[in-house]
Length: 114
Ligand code: SF4
Image (cartoon, protein in one colour):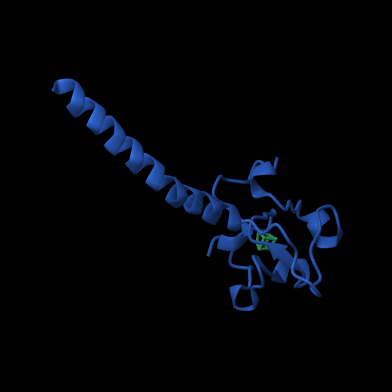
């Protein structure tokens, strides 16, 4: 009898776990979408090592910054120079980068929290 209960519980919770997989997958892909994989077409994109980006040590992935002033959690998406009103596919113009589009996941030494 007890064996039946534990077997039933095993299948019940096992099925719940399987049912939850698509939800977990959606949460994971939602996080992945935060950093755009594709640059928006027809926009001037700020690249690492070019122009103002070179001077300000711009990196497209904030977590890769080697600057001592970088703090975890800082990125273009929460910087006051990131013009969210003109955002396009995870990119927006940055006033510090001559209004070239920067990725929301980027970072530079001119970072200023919103
Ligand atoms: S000033 Fe802000 S938005 Fe512009 S590149 Fe630097 S961190 Fe990103």
